[in-house]
Amino acid sequence: MKSGSNLEKVFVNGHFAVTAELGPPKNNDVSVIQRKVDFLRGYVDAVNITDNQTAIVRMSSIATSAFVIQMGMEPVMQMVTRDRNRIAMQSDLFGATALGIKNIVCLTGDHHTFGNQVNAKNVHDLDSVQLINLVKTMRDEKTLMGGEEKFEGDIKLFIGGAANPFADPFEFRALRTAKKAAAGVDFIQTQCIYDMERFKEWMKMIRDLGVHEKVHIMAGITPLKSAGMARYMAKNVAGITIPDAIIDRMAKAAKGSEEGIKICVEQIQEVREIEGVHGVHIMAIEWEQMISKITEMAGLLPRPKVE
Amino acid sequence: MIKAEQKPFEEILEYLAPYNKILLSGCGACVTVCHAGGEKEGALLASALRMARQKTGKPLEILESTPARQCEPEFAQELSDTIGRVQAVLSVSCGVGVQTLARHFPATQIFPGVNTLFMGETVEHGVWEERCQACGDCILEKTAGICPIARCAKQLLNGPCGGSANGKCEIKRETDCAWQLIYDRSKSLGQLHRLTEIIPAKQWGVQSRDSGPRRIVREDLKV
Image (cartoon, rainbow over all chains, first blue to last red; front, side, top):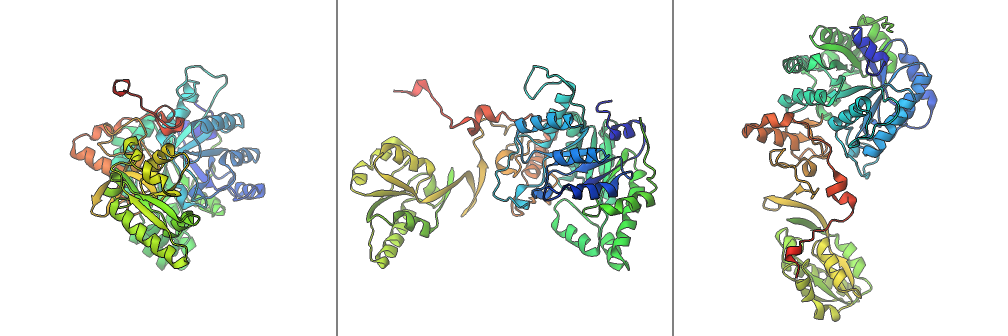
């Protein structure tokens, strides 16, 4: 075991893993975390704690993750390279593991100009591939970046990364995931999948490169709440493609939110059949209360108890 | 070359409010090429300033000069006599030129007339784009001659982020995605395999501005 996390154990025991996402509050109100945890506990193996996603200032992912542990769930702490240099990141990795955090997802992060601090100086001392490699070095070599002296104690982290099969250049997407595998990533969570054909094509490239044998691929799924949301995402979010067939289906449905859940469940069942897909990462954005229903309808319950 | 843009006119007027005789110094090098602070732009700015001040009833006398390269001491020295006859200098050269004058004329206030923007190239007449950030450790041999430090908004060294779509960057949709360019050029050079190599973290603290202003000393050239 690299980390001994529940998520790692679920994979090691050959189960199909399920993670969800929890966005920290835009303040210091712990009850928001509690409410979201109550929606998710028991329905997923671990929950991603986002790190100031879309560059909007929120409670830190490290503090939120620590609260999530206290509340009886396993966090997957996200860490972006946008806001911290290598000194801060290594320091936070010591702190996070001391707080009992066992999973991390290493990301570049949304550009700061999308958020509410557009005049910030962004950092990008490392990129996500380099951060993955940094965490692996701390875990496996017990040395800091560029250092030879070993430190005391263990940095037991199950290392995740992201992949977007829907951004361009498409031919480079699987190669980039292969680079993350070479850098030491243990699992990959993908961007939300709506274009299933393109996702299957990407998975074939992943298998051709042998990446699926080294890394657990988790398919990213986001339930649509309405046809309006689908149209907005298709038009405004770079790197997300939503086929017209899905938008039409949402538009024609009597109740968009119910149709969105149905589509989401079908997507989960479809990705489960793809060779090399070892789990799903369900990003129900500010809709955490639907996770219990989605996992139940998709036949993902009960979640395995692993030792 | 260095690219610059003239500062807002009102801002310049504000700097010069206390004075009635100044030197407006242009530069014959980079800012001439990007039409921000050459002889012609200096003359136009001087006329506009004179007119604006005339209207306020507090006229401004402006001497004009455009040394070949304001950032070179011998050219800066040429301005000595003129500077002795004015109360302040408005320099429309880049930030380097402004500081050269500041170093040589300790008793004279030197104001910047342009904002220095970047090191870039002319992509078409009237359009300039950033190309180099002077990181101090060139990696263009690894990235098919296209710099992700200067041209990727996140300075990614190992491939495009998830926001690259149809060859463009999600942050400024008129901007080419540097990694799309790197991918395309690597492909046409038959060098795609190079993109599978992990580029390690840069040593910012050794070569870049991050360890303070840099300096080159060439003993063989000293006199």
